[in-house]
Length: 459
Ligand SMILES: [Zn+2]
Image (cartoon, rainbow, N blue to C red):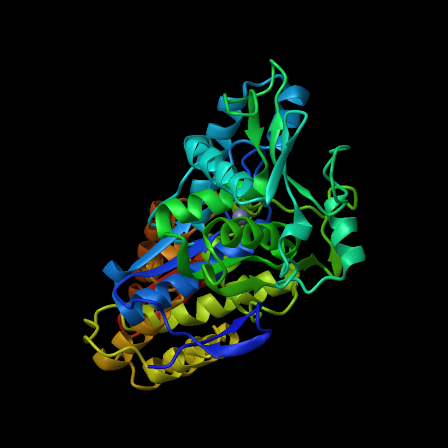
């Protein structure tokens, strides 16, 4: 077993060697909960879900700990509360619930630990105090700032120039910075903003320090993999490294950094102002989550992903093919088999999901060719489970329709018409039988006559 992953820190593919194979740790930056997750937010969740499944396969489910945080204190949340008048606690709870529902619909396993920032304020204050004690941070007018020049190796992950570092840090308003690249660890809160007592007065943490404190609490000062979207490399991950290694010593913190690429929509940057902003919540109204998941995994995680309606349609039609093979073998009990090497090898090569999906097609072809071989069915299901695919009953897949669909035929209506058609054929009333088939087709219901009887699917 050799798992190789691309380490953003070294800019090369490396053999993954966990510090302790009995305790493999992975931290992925989670959502800031003030609004529905968009499809760009869903990409890292799906990508690192596949990695999580692979790590569990390689090291055993009990030996992998996946931590993904919830950022429930942030200026964006405060702004959302001010704009809507809704209570902050209500916004964060409602949005967290929606996030959980959306990610479950995309087939993502929940992480082992999902720490919330507001429940780790004490750890953040301790970390900031330690940075002040070690001369890496300073207090200025109710703020605490990380002093970038105090860390010789700052910038190692992003490899940004000094000018880029300054430009990146400028977004944080703090007129008392000793150095223009310094960033905020703690900031004061007004009475109507969320705040906690601290040695520097009532205030709240900066975003970067949240992840340093929560990863340490749940994975230790040093752990294996840290993941997130590529947009987090700078400043967020760069600053996490600065905080954690300056507090604990160089060489501590994440050993492998993994980042998924950008997501575009129909070739353009996704933005609210361009009107091409797609939330997972909206997408799931019309599309099955598994089709969304397959569409995402059809591009290698490090490549930019161009999200298109056509790509989603193709993913749906590929799943029809896979589930069609499984439906044809519905009565066969799948054999217990080893995970097929073609899929495993693809994923072990820096999560090559397009290649793994190609291998699934070969396995489905094998199942079709053998017309329902027990080992072939077992192989397809086992391989697909590593990708979080094909775990539904095929009937459920083919009969799925968007929630809230009205006016269409119910499953029972369709079954009754199929029975009527069967009776018409038995009575040699082929005109009536054809009429029923055509009527159903006009409503998007496709009948398939096979040796075992007639099955149907929603088109
Ligand atoms: Zn983070």
